[in-house]
Length: 140
Image (spheres, rainbow, N blue to C red):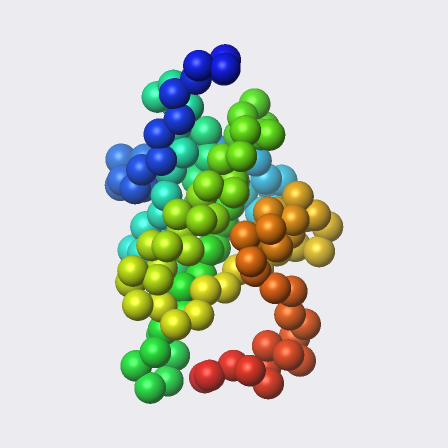
C-alpha cells in the first residue's frame, strides 16, 4: 500500500463470503473467527487496490411495535491495512446503511479487551452501556 493506494468502499456481495472467512481467520483468534458469518442484512467492504482489506457485517434485530435495531455484528481489518482509517469509514457507512433500512437503534458489542474497536466506535458517536442500562432502555 502506498500514498496513492486506491480505497473503494462498497457493498458486501455473496461472492465475497470466502474472503470474509479468510479475513476473519486473519483478524480474530480461532475461538471467534468460526462465528463470523455474513447475514441477510449484508455488510460493507473496504478494498485497497482491489483487495478486500476490511469488512463490517450487519444484522437487523426485530423489536416490538414493528421497530428494529441495526447491529454491526463484526468489524475486521486485515492487520496489513490497519491504521488507514478503514474501520472508522466502515462504521460510518454501516451506520448510514442501517439508518436507510429504518433502524431506530444502531448497536454493536465490543469485547472488553478490544480497546481498538471500542475507541473506533466511541469516536463514531457510540456510547458504552452496561447490561443494566441496556435492559432498562430495551424496547423489547
